[in-house]
Image (cartoon, rainbow, N blue to C red; front, side):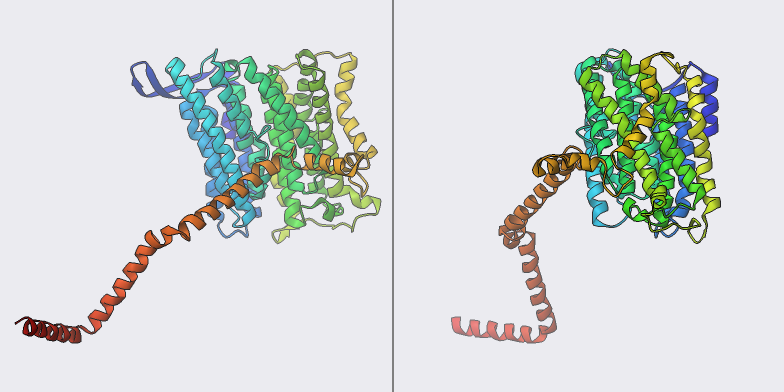
Amino acid sequence: MSFFSFLGAVSLGGDSLVLSWEVTRLSSLGLSVDFYLDTVGLVFSGVVLYIAKSVFHFSDAYMSSSVHPIRFHSLLMCFVISMILFIFIPNLFGLMIGWDGLGIFSFLLVLFYPCHSSLSAGLITGLTNRLGDSFLILALFFSLLVWGSSSLGAGALGVASFSLVVGGMTKSAQFPFCSWLPRAMAAPTPVSSLVHSSTLVTAGVFLMVRYHDSLSDGSMALLQWASLMTMLISGLNACVEFDMKKVVALSTLSQVSFMMFAVSMGFPLLGFFHLISHAVTKALLFICVGLVILSYSQDLRRLGASFLGAEGIKWYFGGACVGLCGFPFISGFYSKDAVIESIFFSSVGYCGFFIFFLSVLTTSYYSARLFFFCFLVGLLGKGKGGVNAFRYGGCSGAYDVHCHCWGLFLLSIGLGGVGLWFFYVMPCMFPCHVSKALVLFICPFGFWAFWLLGGHKDSLGVRDVLAIGHEGWSSGRESFVRELGFLDGLSGQPLVYSGMILSESVNASMDQGLLETYGPGGMGRILKVLLNYNQIMCSHWLALFFLAYVVEVLFWVVIS
């Protein structure tokens, strides 16, 4: 299916094919479901299907000890089908099927492990995605009012455009809705690999790319600054985090913000190009991280170059890291280089320019830090030593690692050059200029900053920089970075606290109040007493009958 999707994209070229089915029409109000086949949708569906194939293969080994593997794979398949429906239905009414399916099945997959942390993460993920659904419903409502159709046309009104942008921001975890994505790491690693590469998180980006011509300038300005803030705080948080899965999740947040920023500047094709190049790289990185976690731990401080002798996973992991930070001539380089160059032709001010380049530097920093703590820290004599063989699932891991990662590794290397030719994106806007040298030196400068700030030592690098100054202010700065601008606490703790207060009030006023006596609880006790009396009467019916007869005789004797 992935092959035929790519073949269809090449066959269509710049053309498109629309299949429409009108569900109902009432006067000028029409509801229809459209299937829109174009190059963008077919390429993205091909990437999604190939990544899904790799993730399903990886999940067979990762979830082999699971109690319910069939249920897990069924939910994962429904999740992929929802994404495919979302891609090919541009109509807002029909698009809600795939959009809601992504939210519902992601909620069920996050809750797959039966524990309190999964329940909390699932509730935050589900509620935030339902908030995005409400904004998409508002966009559909205004579309029906204005045009009498559920298809959003060009020249959309500001309210509908604003609703569409905010809905995409919640689904793609943009500021201030960015705290749910790190919490979704409670899901199994195969789910994270699929969610963070090409499905749930990228759905908002694809929505912005699809409806870019219908979005107003005000909504684009909102998206631009929201993506800049998300890119900055997620990049800084990844530089001080020690949970390996959370570092990769924060890198996804940073890269999705990078795509959103490209769309908000008026370059939707560049944002989509970076989306597909990032998808294969992030899927490869998550599979490698899952193999590391399955064999040892996900705490970077406990690894100590444990996989120094595992050549297969080390090179795949390193290739994913350099592709993530945009190393020259890897897939991520072509798309990221074009987006960075395009900022010189945009109307972003000096503040936005500074935030953008600082955020891009953090990508190289946390990529170098992630690879160093997993594979190289033992070379400095500070690790606990490495293992000579990589094993999981009771069998040798060399064959399985290549089987999971080889195809994604090839795509992460060659997809950028092919995509550059396919989407007709110019590889170089100014070949001989100081700005071009600045763009090319961003990736190595981030590696140098990692070494300069002491990230390779036992000290925490960026955390040491944040600790400069007064103790209270330094701890506040570190909390700001670690909690995604305090959004992590604001999105979870107030909801939990309010829910506990409400439950206590209900318990005091209803369960332990008047309702306990005169409500269902009191009625239940009365019926129980009546049933006990009935049982006593049934067991002593002869004595009761004789007693009633004697009483009746005495009564008539007295009154006569």
